[in-house]
Length: 103
Image (cartoon, rainbow, N blue to C red):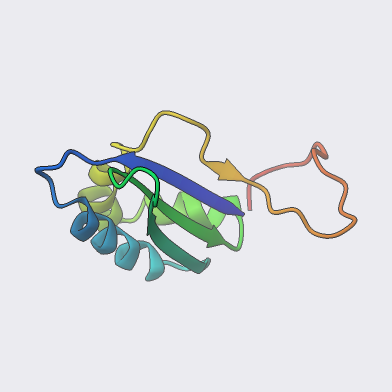
């Protein structure tokens, strides 16, 4: 499962440090696979935190941990209001299969 959160930074805030701290918190959770922080080359105020998870359940459990609720969710809640959770596409896989998303 892929999670893509995009953020628009105010020039006065240190969004990089906040996102790096959130990434460290998320990376310490069970089910975290990998992730990356990036900044747009075309619009330096636009940032992205992209993470991969073993399952949607692992991601949801990570967000419900005490540290993430306390320090991570306030930052993540400032993400642009757009879809952020994606299923990964494997070669020849059938997409949009109705199935339980809970693990």
